[in-house]
Amino acid sequence: MFYQIKYTSIVLDGLELKSDKYAFTISNIFDFDKSYSSTDTYSNGKVYASSKVEDKKILLNGYVKGNITDFLALNKMLNRKDLLTLKVAIEGFKTVEAKVLIGNKGISTDGVNAFSCELIAFDPYLYGDKLIAELGIETYTGMTFPITFPVAWNGSSHKITNITNNGNCEAYPIITISGPCQNITINNITTGDAIWVDIALTQFDTLVIDNTEANRGLYLNGKRVIEIKKGNWLKCVEGLNSFSVYFESNSNNKLVKIEMIERFI
Image (cartoon, rainbow, N blue to C red; front, side, top):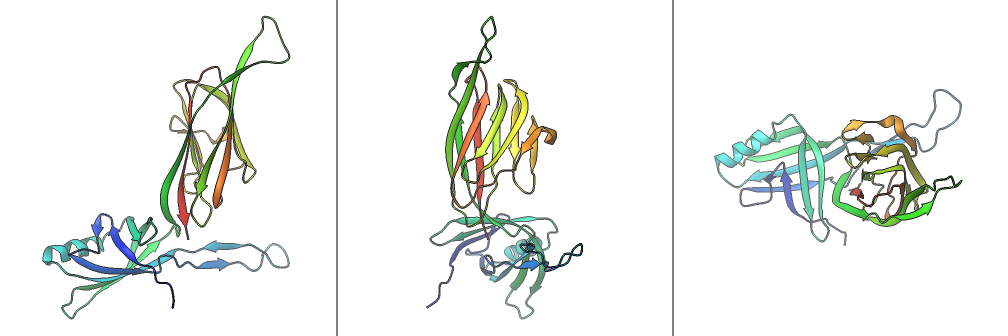
């Protein structure tokens, strides 16, 4: 006896392909290929851990059960040249999502209105649920040393929150910080990675630290400010990840939000 994945829904850019209009199946959704570089052209010997996950080729097969309008709607979809959103619901699991480009396709000529199509996912990972951890920051006040007169007081905040990566591979968080605050440090205690920024945010400022591979960068009110980054980019390993957040401020009118989308391969 072998395990067979059951797909309860297949939606390609809003078109449901398991319905009273269409009867489609999908395969290779969790398959992936890796390429390896076994030699380094700059030195003798082998290079280890030198590999890349290749584009994923998902196969879509089925036929039209409806009328000519349904046939033309699908044919138009499969002639698109841009990236489409593929959403697949899996029995006993969840809905996963990928961005795909229509590759090779064929249509039967025996009057069955059957289609066979290759969906190319240049990002081979499948994406699941978005997880969000929000911190309403509580501040405590302490004396700044060395003491000068008149006495100066400075508030600081240090808080820990957890986020669980239920995927089967690393995921990358997007962290949003609303001011006012300064001397910001975000640390993933689980992995030991930390990122800190030397910037003072006003109450009108929002800083986004995007650790995702596609859009990696720091954005202040939408403007890229990569030059203020210090430390390592952050990732979430499988399972529980504990984040420590620290910054200085005299206001509790702040919010730190950590967002992460599960990834599967």
